Structure formats: structure tokens, C-alpha cells
Length: 460
Ligand SMILES: Cc1cc2nc3c(=O)[nH]c(=O)nc-3n(C[C@H](O)[C@H](O)[C@H](O)COP(=O)(O)OP(=O)(O)OC[C@H]3O[C@@H](n4cnc5c(N)ncnc54)[C@H](O)[C@@H]3O)c2cc1C
Image 1 (cartoon, rainbow, N blue to C red):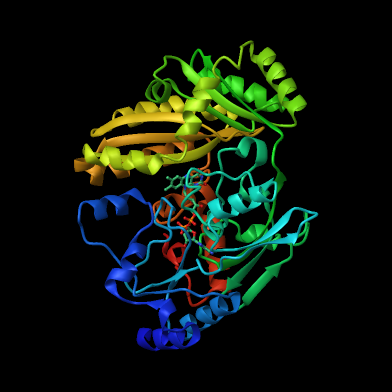
Image 2 (cartoon, rainbow, N blue to C red; image 1 turned 120 degrees about the horizontal axis):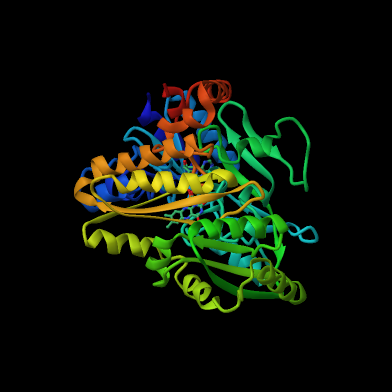
């Protein structure tokens, strides 16, 4: 490794201002929102800052940085908004962080088609505000909407609160550019759909910075909805709520934003017994009216009567980080874990996993909601709170339990947070030995010197 030489070369390329090496300035890059790292920092424990942070402004500079990194045997890790929750953007002390925040353009690529051309470093919130000023919307609202940037969202295959109506980020991407060490800038032009080997754009959505650095994304946008109505209702039980959701989704009259809470989370968030469902139905006013009527008839409920549940939730929908600090102040840790599961296994997974979680010593709370629905199943989202004093044991036990249970019940180990560092050890549960072998071979082929972090190669 020739770090000094690398830093010198990158200083020449970008200018001194865009290469950071001081301990104080590199400190903010020492973690993302992986709770283990957040709690280490809050408890004043040692943190790991990167050797340097570099801030390229153009795709050509990103390409050159990967070339120089290979020449000098340096490991790079791309950094977006740092809102990942599994340690994916967190560096080792000898790695160099590539902060993409200067790739920050937003412009129409094709106004008639509603395709917007966005740099990887653009904050999602800024993009949405710009789009709304043009009468358009991406309709992608993850709970990290204020913190996340486009490159990070694409690299983790993120999903937003309106996913049941509009899909995940993968449904909005119509093209992208990605810089791959040795290969250079791969350009996948924006088109409505393609059927061309693999295809390359989708191959790199969710690559988490292991196979390339996303520099530019073309996103398809929607017209702002004419009408938007909040709905809500109470179900007898979470099993009932799941069954209602399945029927609603099957008939394709689901709210665009749709969430159901188990009894525990219904008490916590709404102070109610039973299992609460909330939704936002959007579209032309006539369609919204018709949908509300049909949906109410289908499940036999007055779904307007619970609109205050939806209002209450919408008011606080981006307050997760605030809640995390509040719990910390009373000595509690917080972890959220999401998995996906086919309909037939959703309730068995729910009951079996909660029974096991409840037996973990030091765990104070475990509850579940579902907020992303498909014809074939749903995502279950677990919220847990535990004693921070016991974090070292409890944390791993929660993870081991949920990953094993999801896998046993034919679910996926991750619905949208990705793998990061935390989930690497469970990857085999998802893809098996053959899958890991394939991932390793692709990594060796596209990045043989491991210029980008190489954790998957170290698996097994
Ligand atoms: C409060 C809170 C709420 C959240 N809610 C949601 C939610 O509703 N839905 C959801 O999907 N996620 C959610 N997340 C998780 C997180 O916001 C997402 O994973 C998001 O996509 C990460 O984006 P980022 O820009 O912060 O990426 P980062 O955290 O900076 O990076 C994430 C990963 O992508 C890699 N990466 C970053 N930029 C690039 C690039 N340009 N090219 C290649 N690799 C890159 C990094 O190396 C890292 O591995 C939440 C997180 C928090 C803290």
C-alpha cells in the first residue's frame, strides 16, 4: 500500500481542498447509522476514522480515483448520506472514503418523458422539492428522506413509504452510470424498459459499493396526484390485518401508502387495542373516491373513520432518529430489522419469531408492522428495544433469531436495508454456497484488486 503517494496524486487531481486527512474532519465519516457504531460513539468508545476522505466533482475524477487506488493498493468505500443502518459505508482505518456529495446536479433529461438526470450525491429531499416545483414527484419517501442521497438509495435498493402504490427505487430507475475499477465508466442509457443481457443497470442496483461506484442516475417521475385521502381502521388481530391486506392487494385496490401494525405496536403508536391499519389513497379525485368505497366494502369497514390514525402517523413519519436518542437517554438500545415473506408464511413467521424474541434476556420490547405489500407477500418490520448494558449479547441474539426464523419460513433475510457489514454472516441463508461463489467470482472479475471493499470475498 502506498497511501502517501495516493493522497498526493489525488490532491493534484482534485485540489487540496477536496482531500481530507485530519482526524477532526474525517471523524463524521467514521460511521453510518448502524446502531452498534452509533452506540459506540455515544458511549465515548474508540471509533474508526478513515485514512482520508476524497470528494470528486466529476465522473471522470471518480474513474481516475479508482485507477490511482488500484495503482497504490488502496481500498475505497463510497459514502452517500451515511444513513445506512448496517455499517456498509463505515470505513476501516486504512480505507479511503469517496464522498460523492459534489456530484450534485439535477436536470431534466427528457421533460416530456418525465425522466430526470441526477448526480449520485443529490439529497433525495432536494430532488423531491425540485420535482414538486415542476409539478412532478418521485414518490420515493423512505423514513431517511432527509438524510439519504440518490447514489446510496440506489446502491441499497431502498424502498419508501408509498411503495405499495409506486414500487421501490428499482421501479423508478430507467438508466444509470457506474464506475467500475479497471473497466471504467459503464453507461446504461435511459429507456422505459430493456431486455438485454442481465441487464446491466439492474445488476448494479443494490450493489452496496462492492462492485462499482454509481455516479449518475436517470429516474422516472410521476405527476403530482390530484387528490390524496387518509384512511384507517381497526382489525381484530394482526392475523386479521394481514389477511385483509392480502385480499386488498390481490384486488389491486390498495392504498398507495399502506401500513398495518400488530397489537403491540398499535398500543405503542396509537394507544389502541387490536391491530391498526392506515393508508393514503392517491390519484385522480374520482378514482380515489371509488377506491375508498370499494375497499371499505371489500373488508366491511368504514375506512374513513380511522383517518386520524393516518394523520397521527404522517405527522411523525420522519422522527425515527429523534426516538433513537430518547431511548438512549433512558439506557435503551433500538434496532429495526426487516425481512420479506410469502403470504402463507407471514403469520407463522410473525408468531414463531416473536415467541423466540420474547425469551431473550435483556430485550424489553419487540413489535412488528408491515408497510410494503406485494401480490405474493409482504415485508415484516421488527422494532426492538433492549438494555444497552447487555448490548453485546442481546444484539447478536436478536439478529441470529430473526435471520434464522425468516430463512426457515421461506422469507428473505433483507427486504430493503441491504447487507452492509451486519448481514454478511447471514448471506448464505439467502443464496446458499453457490450464490456466494457467484458473488465472489463476479467480484474477482470486475474488481480483481479489491479496490472497493471486499468483505464478500472473505466470507466462509
Ligand atoms: C432513520 C432511518 C430511516 C430509514 N428508513 C429507511 C426506509 O424507509 N427505507 C429504506 O430503504 N431504507 C431506510 N433506511 C436505511 C438507509 O436510509 C438506506 O439504506 C439508504 O438507501 C442509504 O442511503 P445513503 O445515501 O445514506 O447511503 P450510505 O449510508 O452512505 O451508503 C449505503 C451503502 O451504499 C454504498 N454507497 C453509497 N453511495 C454509493 C454510490 N454512489 N455508489 C456505490 N455505492 C454507494 C455505501 O458504501 C454503503 O455500502 C433508514 C435509515 C435511517 C437512519
